[in-house]
Length: 474
Image 1 (cartoon, one colour):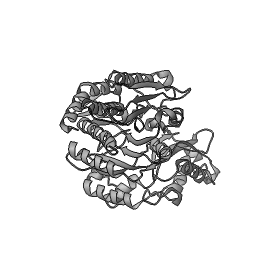
Image 2 (image 1 turned 90 degrees about the horizontal axis):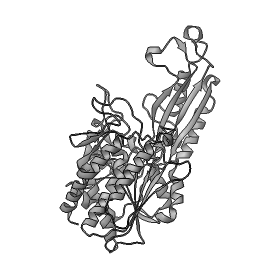
Image 3 (image 1 turned 180 degrees about the vertical axis):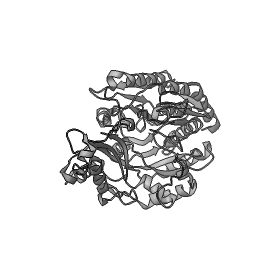
Image 4 (image 1 turned 45 degrees about the horizontal axis):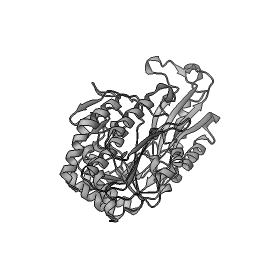
């Protein structure tokens, strides 16, 4: 590969074609089905599918076929097949993955910014979904096109862009089963939906946490009662939930209490985490927008990274049953409900963890209150297989060629359910799990951005890995 030529080709495609398309994509309020139950009627999902599929179909890739696959009652999926090129194998398959659904708006966007307002500032494209994960389809095809522009070989490629990832990918297994004959048996999976420790080198994700999320609710009354009349006799529904969460989490430290929700951390992951902590230093926590005076958890950066990637952790992400402050009267409320997001270690089964949490929280409730835990997202994490020497060499060379620094390996705290599905289905495959979600990119939160120069270099790295995949057996 002529690296400078490849980077120039990719840069021009990004700036002349991809960025303008992403600007239009960000304008579409295409929230994932979990956050927009009427997504089909609203039509935003269809708008996003048409935009991305339309751009892909316009690209000059000989032999490419594209189909928007639709299973009854499920979100659509874009499926592309690209034949091998310049002597690449038709019997081998590379699978490239991304998604086009988005997280909800979230509050706190800076002045002039918003979830559906694309803004380019300081080489960053702000708005919901550009980095997570609208760029994936564009970046995947751009990498393939960069190889073809130089006449370089690559194996048969399959590109899958789903529309349910932010809801736990609950539609995806049906599509994988439906398309299994057309997918084949991938020897390499490339996923462009993960993170980066900095914007200075290529980062490869080696593990992903799972999730056991749901709504915990406590009812103590059938209607609200004057707090002066009821308090001291009727238990507080908030206190009931506080006691129940105390079964799950140590209120002083945040440590998850039950041993069943912890897992042994492999020595290789510990060593990779030490290297990451050494490389990033205090940037591990300085990347977060802490309120004045707030201190990070854990005693050092090594343990902060382990907390984020291999240890379970609980977040309360929503509340129901509480009125806004300006209309909160002196009433003992009939119920409180909390949305719990429990991240679990990569090797813990998501369904089993959800059932464990349900039993833990619902059994023997305080004051015999009416308590329920309704699980709505159960996802198993993922721990990568040992990386093949050819892939490590390709990643390291690509990182040095396009960033000027070696590749780094990291664990990621989020969940990509597709990885566990593919890991089970194709245990012999190698995985390149990477992405553009670096420091302060703030996916799911306010001021989400795509770092454009980093994404262009990442695209070039993917191109080099694609041709190295061919060369490993040449």
